[in-house]
Length: 196
Ligand code: ITT
Image 1 (cartoon, helix red, strand yellow):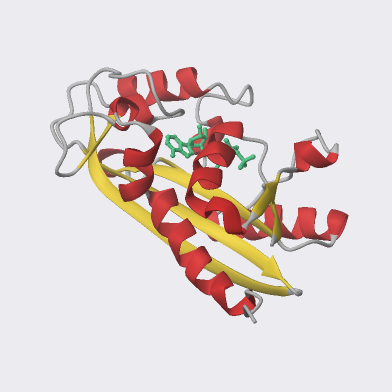
Image 2: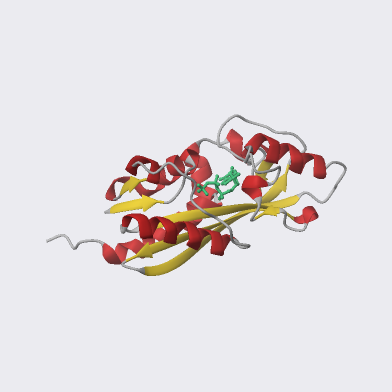
């Protein structure tokens, strides 16, 4: 099955490709020659995920899904949340975003944090959303080189390392995105061609 993943983030695409396996051919807008921004102007992850999926669906008319993810820190009242990509400004610099969150967390003892991910699918014109979430805590300094975004400062519950110290398969097993994509795959089973 051919699916478009409405993202400009190649790290997300790499994680999702590993999760979907061979039953799906995953294309990104970039693979189809579209290199401009995909609008995301909503105030919730759900709104943004739907906006991105609708935009790409209208452009290409192929089955399509998107992913909107927020890093939610309890002591910051859920920030950066839906503003995770541009927390430190319109440059959308992941390192600057992470450093800003760390500065705002200086001296705070409440370290609870989570990633929440909403995947929006448009299939035969019908919209469906899937959610994944992973609880953990925010570290006081970055650790590890793998992953992307806020991974170096997030320690998932039950682990003594950051997301950036796990390899892609290990992160996928427990991550917000891994959970949401696993629900997407279950849902897509109904569209599989029966084997004769
Ligand atoms: P697309 O909208 O093109 O998919 P994006 O990077 O803008 O890509 P989001 O709007 O979902 O993605 O923004 C989420 C922000 O949170 C962004 O800065 C990412 O770097 C970060 N992020 C997303 N998923 C993450 C993950 O699994 N681990 C760490 N940081 C993540």
